[in-house]
View 1: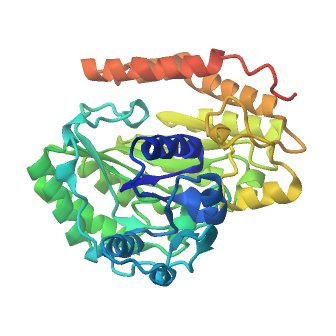
View 2: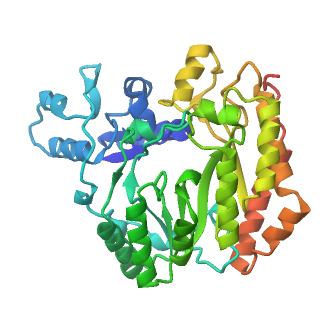
View 3: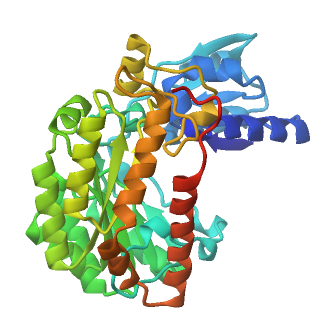
Amino acid sequence: MAGITSLTPNYKECGAIIKYIKKERRSSTLVMGGVHISALPRETLAENEELDFGVVGEGEVTFKYLLDWLALERKDTSALYRIGGLCFRDNGKIVVNKRRELIEDLDQLPFPAYDLLDVGSYELKPHHLWSCNRINIKPVMSLFTSRGCSHRCGFCASHVIWENKPRYRSPGKVLKEIDTLVNSFGVRVLYIYDDSFVSNRKNAMVILDGLIQRDYDLNFLCNARADQLDEELILKLKEAKCHLIRIGVESCSEQVLKAMGKGSSPSLAARTFALCREIGIAASASLVIGYPPETWETFRETLDKIKKINPVACEFFIAVPFVGTDLYAMAREKGYLLSQPWQEWKQVPEKPVLRTPSLSPRELIEMQKIAFREFYFRIPKIMELLKQVNSGGKLRYYLKGLLSVVSLIIKNPRRNLEN
């Protein structure tokens, strides 16, 4: 059996892998899970003839029941209809079962089989490295302390899997997993991958206190919402050796933020980044360009404000209407989607898949180039980043990141890009 997780941006690559495996091993059973098939189960099975099964939504229990069925010597296809969250074919007919209820107690799930991974080969990505302190770069491992988010931003597909029902692991179970990663597998960097690590303040505080008490040679980064951070929490994050907080700002236009359903504000983002800078912890920002009703005026407003806020780093993504999101539904309804193959549905695309009455694909690409150029190629910002280079490893990473930004800025759009 081979299992593969598909997001919309890597959906075509997943299809190619499925075809390759089936060609090499005809008897293999192929299963796909993830956001894309969870949003479009019937369409995904129809588009991938080599795919045998799909797992819709949260997958652990559904996948386990599927494995039990496959292990039977005599298989009764009618039993597949009773496996919640499964989609499959029955005599050429595509069947999509009712979704399974979410797992209420996440503590019942075992730790991942880290012994099957080459843990030592994983290292931080350049845009996860920002910090003035000397930090570990590898081995890095990702970790979840929760699943889901109570918010529903229009561009985010988190709810396709987790719904809008955040669930939390107990701090004790999380700390036990961290103990295992550090002591048994030599992990020195963690990426706490929750939509927002600090959404449950009480849990986050207990986990951070546990890390402080252990005093491991371990630094970590996490995602957080600006409206969930305050001075006490940021101080605690720093003491626990958090080297980077990644904050989703998305836009500095009140009009665009309201359309997104973000539930935040530019003034709140400015306050949070000022606190991080004052306390001495790196904080980066991610922004979305071109979310309707974006215009050149709202883009300029966002770029001017984010330069003034001056996060340690910024990622500028072009709005992509990922399947299952509110943006996807709106774009389909209003005719904003362009006819593009799935491989173009990326946040740093050569050819955007979304146009609005105000902005063409060419303008979206130009906006992204302007944003990266104006934010990073300022003398004060360049000097600030140079001060962070305190090791050969960091220098290598920063050069790699710089080359990526430069290539994005100078690349020419495709000739057939619409005006």
